[in-house]
Image (tube, rainbow, N blue to C red; front, side):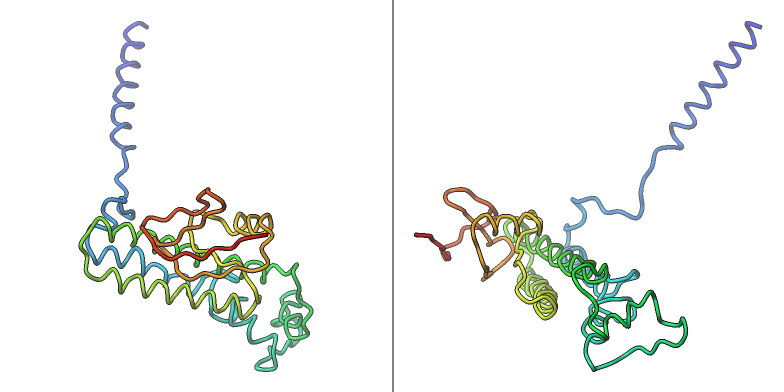
Length: 229
C-alpha cells in the first residue's frame, strides 16, 4: 500500500511538471507595446491603418455602410431618396424600416443610440492615435508623422461630419482620456451652451481655473479663454 502511494505521488509530480510547460503561452496574434511603434511602417499600421477597420462593420449600427442599420441607412431611408418595400414579413424587421421612412424613430431607438456610440468610438480611437503620434514626435526622428497625423485628422473630421449632419450640435471630444459622458457633464457644470475645437492631438489642453482637465504633451503658445462676469 505504501509503495502504491509513493508511485501515485511520483505520477502526480510528473503530470504537474508536464502541465506547467504545456500551459505557458506565447501568443502569435498580439504585438507587445514596445514592438507596435518600432518602425515607421508599424506606426502607420497601428495608428492610421487600423482606423479604417471601423468604416465597415459586421454588426448592426457599427459601420457607414447600408442594410446594417448604419449611417447610410439613417441618412437615406429617413428621406425620399430611397425606400425599402415590405412584402409580407420580408424586410419588416419589427417595423424598423417603416419607422425610418415614416419618421417614427426617436431617442429610444437602439439603432440611433448605437450609431451615436459608434461614431464617437472611432473619434476617441482617432484621438488616441493622435496622442501616440504626438509622443512619437518627441521620441523618434520618423519623417512621415506629419502625414500620418493629417490622415488621422481627416478621418476624425469625416466622423464629426456625420455626427453634425445627423445630430446637430454635438460635443467635441479631442482627448482619448476623457469620456463622452464626462465631457458632457463637465460642460453642463460649467454652464456651457456650445464648444469649439481648434486643434487636437498632443497639442490639446483644457484648463478650468488653474486645473488641467485635459493635459497637453507639448508646449503651446495660442489659447482661447472663456470667462464669466
